[in-house]
Image 1: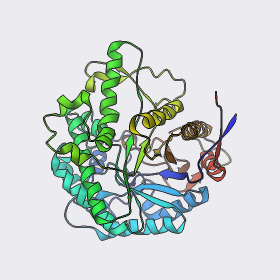
Image 2: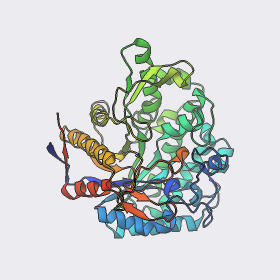
Image 3: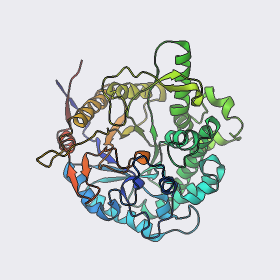
Length: 446
């Protein structure tokens, strides 16, 4: 075992999303979103909804107290677009903004840096009805929504993330139908949804910068190294195609103003002159979400002829995802090499396990503790090797509504009893608190 240390000014905390924790879906003028419709259509695997979820809308002071007790100095949360502008455009709902006002003030009072994400998948349903991310009509409404929120909060919130995981939105929402809005429209729809999110992001970044000076602006992308299952040429080519779609459209768009070469011909029909300049923006901070590598193989009939291959792994989470902390180290080092080492932070990293409440009332989630320890060690190693990584926010503070999986998957370092709302810190919470307090993690280093 070796002790690895983190920089003194490191950001420590957690990330959440509005739809997954807030509940109160019909409170104080909130409008409908695509996930409300998806759930109403019976698409949630365990039959649950986010109507209450963690009831964070009413219990947020308790949750902020948990953050403070753990020693957090940062917290990334998302704003619910339909809570602020119920129809997606038009009238602003002051009661929705009032909620985020109270939350921000509570965080600042607790000594926690608020980091706001503007879009974590809850597109207002009227905008989806008008074409959603498949058309350009969503771009200006998103920029105006960003401006409205910044006008209210930017005097206190200095960190602004535009989107969360545009690749997941495009692929699973529009391409294969596993997430809201539930369309199975294939490859062209995936690329259109990616491109229009990029354009909306660029417009929103400019709108916020014009509204308020002195802010740190960025976005959050789920980056996962794509590796071929083996050295077979077809599998190597499939992994390269999937890397272009999953990682490079979003990443190269904002950082380089480029369409990946492998996709340029495919996207030429809807990329208009000037689009790449509108997409590119000199962001101050990039949030990276990491859960595992992606091991790919060629498979006909799947989007872009690629599908999951053998991960060559012996550890798995309750989501069926491989546990590969070395992939996070590789990702940060490759990002440093390929993109000039701009400032990044880990905006999501965590694991779902089938937690059990023990006879003593505690949750001894040893698998999650091991997951966090190994991934924190990977981050510390990368920082020691010169990667410009500024912080680590675990996913997630609370067990929550896990999208199409409903309430059946638990990612939190704090357990939520969905009947009573009771919060119970798990062993992983205590472990993470100790790492934050000491600035060190003990890890097995080869």
